[in-house]
Image (tube, rainbow, N blue to C red):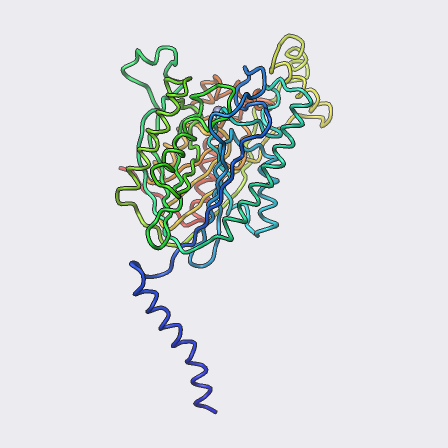
Length: 463
Ligand SMILES: [Zn+2]
């Protein structure tokens, strides 16, 4: 009896050792692995819709230049912890849409907010989503209904794709590295009209092209996710397109058939692709970005250990003193266009709630994939955040802006003091009561540092 019991006890151990030896000899690298899965779908609207991002448009879309996509990469570390990165050819996720998607993903797949990144390319030739920049679009009830219907379909599709990506999880390797390209221009400090005459472009800038490469165990690339800090505003036409990030993804997928190319917008709020306005220029910048990614793919990349840490929080960002009722009434009477609608809406909020919004719950999130830190910020993030965070956490850091909630521009303290579009007037476009209160940069960076420490990311002193 004793011997039999010992055999029964040892049998699984023997099997396990044999299996491990077999696995080790069958693969190039030993040890535990990531798992990864990818899913994708076209999200080009089937009917004409209002196009997002510009107040000056006066009618709905007229066809498609290139299809819009949403793509999901699910990853799982050696201990079984999962996360999903969603990229999309959209302007941004309004809070309402983002909450619906993230709540559903939590219910269906058990992922918390720290395990989900909803990112976008910030294309200005995608559809308007429910709850986004409503004051600036002169839309009627019928168009509004189309926007609501599309948004619900989109939410469902992203939740379904997340399930598909998770159910296709298979052993994988993940690599990271920063590349470089330089077609973006600091739009606050350089003038578009005279850009072709300028020989000394002014910064600040961050030229990084962060790249995450995912391969199967045989080394075949199944996905490549990359970013760049530059507005997707080459095009202001009436056709759906992914702008330069759309062309970059198409080019990578042409170079590497079978791979899913995914793009996230970085800290591009004050960066424009200049010169711009033509389709060949959007194609050119797309190819330039794809060439930067391709170079990184073909060089040695850092292989990431299959360990994943994630952290998420929302920090209250305060608005400065709100306008008085009298000031709002004056604007409502004297202004036109979106300023008039903004004042009307603020007066309604004042009447319904007794006061205007005094703060906003701003989302920040951190992932650590092996030794690779990834930090995501909500809203239209200006480039100084990327530069500042890299001074603290090193140049290898990946920055994702416009993530999880596109509520407003997020100016640096310098831009907030200077004012202008990114510092002040864009708040009206976003339907918010006024500019951010001074101290915003310190608050955001302070919160991000806390999350980074929680996720085991260390500061790196740059000399
Ligand atoms: Zn923008």
